[in-house]
Length: 312
Image (cartoon, rainbow, N blue to C red; front, top):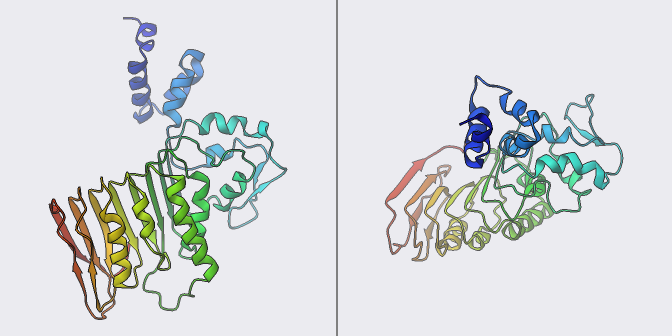
């Protein structure tokens, strides 16, 4: 069978593209293949752009966006109001991205994304995104700020959302959140279920200011939840468990933190598919909290109790 015959089989050609992308010995082969023929271009580009480690390659496709190199915070400036034609190249590649993993270490100031969204006629920057990982290694960022940053990437197609904001849950000297910050974060959680109704895996690591976790009950497709958030009272954890107890597909709950006592954490007798739950003791030497999960119809096959002095 000739090369042209092999490449004409769509499924086989896709496998070849994936091999070229992941082969360390063939660095630019897939890009070269995409440029070699219009016949191969679209499929090769779909594979090449399906998973992105950051947004920098896309941002370079917006002619009006320039980096302010003299600033230490890696800011971006929009030279003029963006028109439809300014988005042509950006949209051509952005529509192919399914997985986006952003580990923010200061290379690009993340406020640029919400600013760019103001010039878009669509409600997000990457319309077909399935998985978003957003890691912020910046203790000065509140989760309210991070929630605003990721808003530009929330799509109805999103199935996996991983958001981690570095924070010190034992910093007693930290300034208390303003009412405006708490209200903004509560609204973000409320709207998250509307923007991303199909989420199956949800990870939140941050100080959420004690905002209620009742919004979790709206994610009817959830199969895994990882909540490494600060829960100041036993009642808050009970609310989180109650919200998740009726989710029909939830199999795994990870990272729940037992707050300072005294108190009893309980849940309603449901959890129809739960097979694993892990609980972390994050108390600071206060009175104990009793964790008393109700027995679901099918008891979890795995119950893990951990002791941690702080979150990762």
